[in-house]
Image (cartoon, rainbow, N blue to C red; front, side, top):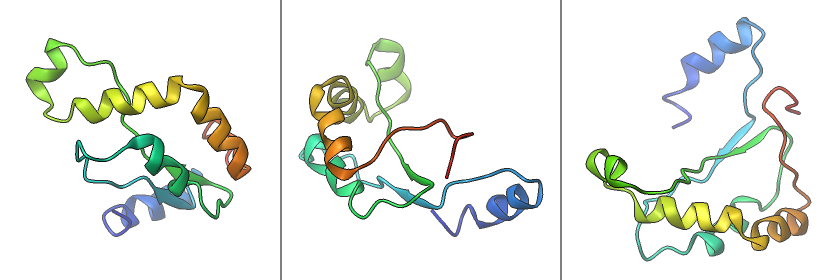
Length: 103
């Protein structure tokens, strides 16, 4: 993923657009994965400008028609709506910021 975005990252920096420093959250969307177990691992050794990929969503017929990855989306959504998400952020010393706040 880093290699695929290298050119865009260079162009963004030249244009003064700040990007993320590291990218975490890559997974295979296996239904066996427990997102509440995975997410704290993405927060290990946090660094300024870290970005964690996620794909939360509420699944409906329209989404089912175009996306085979529906169960994991709902699992992520439920986790982010649960108090465990805030506890995991606090335990890792991480806070959410807008991209413009960045590092």
